Length: 241
Image 1 (spheres, rainbow, N blue to C red):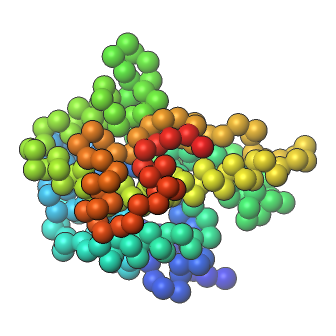
Image 2: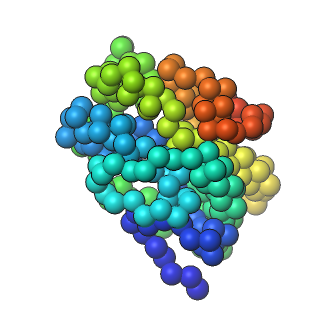
């Protein structure tokens, strides 16, 4: 058995093939971290505390603070994506129930999902994002949402820094990995006791873009010296499977 490590510790080489993790949209992580601290917190994070997932995937311990972090390199981003591709399991926080079900299906199919695994033990104080007509936003970080409005106070330079956050690449790869595995598992799930619904999770069928209007997929990949692949472009654009 391997020890369970939680918190903000960096990943070590020997842990990669055994790693299990749930990833969240980068902008949602920033908003969760800043909470009620306001725009000044968001500005500080964008200026010197981006790429947290890249850093942890490449072995850097990250404190739960706004301390200025050293610059990222393209080699770190490439290593982060390479390590992510070797994970034993990848889930998504916004698809918690589906992620738990999928983890059971691939890792311990004889063990049913327990209700306690699906509890929200740390609910957000933020209200659900809603569009201009009161409907719940399908894509919670886009134009009309509360989250998008909270980033409007950033300067043009800060918005550009946020647009080039490499964690968007990590999350794109994680979402593609999760949706691809889920699709394969549900198609091969023929017995009556299958713990996966027949339909894909919403995040895998919507057209929600990871990137916002400030940057294109080509710009982000070029900035970090990455080669364009159809799979990564598909994930970044948020096109359904």
